[in-house]
Amino acid sequence: MVTFPNAKINLGLDVVEKRPDGYHNLETIFYPIPLCDILEITPAEEDDAPDYTFTMHNALFDGDDNDNLVVKAYKALAADHKLPKVDMALYKNIPTGAGLGGGSADAAFALKMLNALAKLGLSDKKLEEYAATIGADCAFFIKNTPAYATGIGNILAPTECDLTGYCLVLVKPDIHISTKDAYSLVTPAAPATPLTSIAGRPATEWKGAMKNDFEKSVFAKHPSMEKIKEELYAMGAVYASMSGSGSSFFGIFDTEQDIKEIETHFPGMFCWSKVL
Image 1 (cartoon, one colour):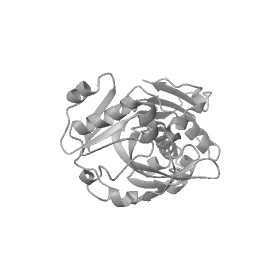
Image 2 (cartoon, rainbow, N blue to C red):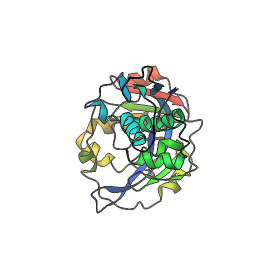
Image 3 (cartoon, rainbow, N blue to C red):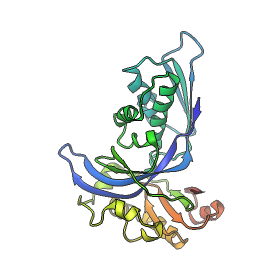
């Protein structure tokens, strides 16, 4: 069984308040995009095979394979259900450390695949409960449709936001943003205008109204990243923003953008473009 876990972008991100547990409540809109990893899960061929094997390609994982979210997804289901012995292989196309939710998508798709492979019959709601134990934004990828997210990103509600027909451009510099750095200059506060109200307007009206609260901290520490956003606007984006806590940026254009031309604007960076 092969599937294609896709990335997401954050359309706006407001840090609303600090919680007693030290985390922060957020408001954001998760929007799925067709930049995909490849995940294959197949039944093991040998009777004496281990419960699972896991291999990853086209990326380095800094840690033990048991810490990978795909493996955590297997273990989460295996704790409550009888699963077949499987071989799992992940080919990465979604950049890591980009604010695009690649690892969370891989885990959520693994949950869905294992549910089907083992014929568990678990509902989306139940799969979302398992996903929430793996990562804050993991549950989003179970239904994988645009969603207004609150809490720490784990409370989801449908949204009518639609970018169909727009061209999306992604740019990711080779910069790592730590969670500590992202929050360093953030002052939690409820937004003056609800994010859902802004996202309900055409994307051509988002500039100056929609924001990502993490940009203030990130731009202060990495001024070169602000220049990426400025360049996307100079190229004609109707809206541009950092996704999540970075370090990727997206630009929304009302005309198709040539990937070769984009790469000349952002040499040495990961670039991707697609009409949605």
